[in-house]
Image (cartoon, rainbow, N blue to C red; front, side):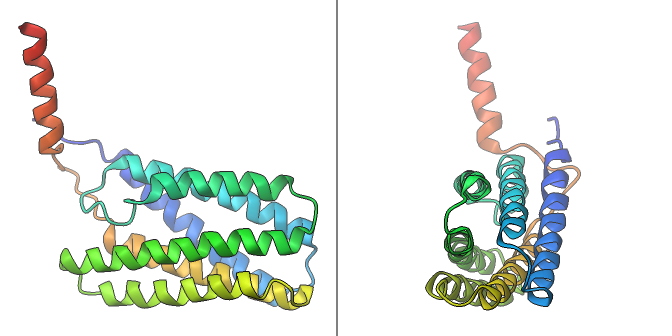
Length: 204
């Protein structure tokens, strides 16, 4: 039986790691330089959300061995792309809008990662509790970002940076600990049976 191509899994894992590191870097930058313009922040976050959404879609269709980190990435990837486009083209109440949109995205990702942590425990991944802890913290920061969007611009930028930093750390640790790439991974049994049934139908 032909083994599954690991290239999409590798692209998704590397993409996840790169985007997570960029999120962390952006978070540190926003915390260190809270006086950055709202327009620049909006452009950076919009592009980052679209790029990460695309990476999540690749991850969902890569069909890695555990199917943990990417299991919700079809819906969440589409959501990130849509929200990223909205952020890029929204010019009214830019900073508040960015924080609300990103806060919702981070909150949802934290909730999804809580489920992934529970599934990781079932798979026997010993550090599932760390994913759970990071997910709860990230979801809490997402709620804070949504609730505190009326504070001053500089304080809001710092909170935005903290949210991005938490999100980056959460995704980085999740993908490293739960995405296992096996070079000789076999296709799913269901897929193999489906192909076999299709062949039989053609001959009948």
